[in-house]
Image (cartoon, helix red, strand yellow):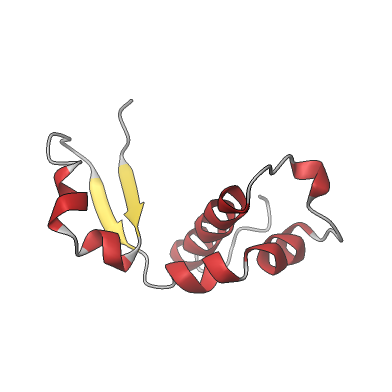
Length: 88
């Protein structure tokens, strides 16, 4: 794989051990998303609101961690795209 961007929680970003996993990658933007925990903790609510659904059952999430990652990514996109992600 050849990622162009890696988004980490502030704790991961400030951990030399975590950053060491990516030391061999070149041309990659590694950044911390400061609101990581906020989006992670409100995953169900954030995803339901964004997709305008009453339930996430049809999305195929099998574990809470999957919803947390999806919600955090949604929050990151909202931040970097200044809220203009209605097309997603």
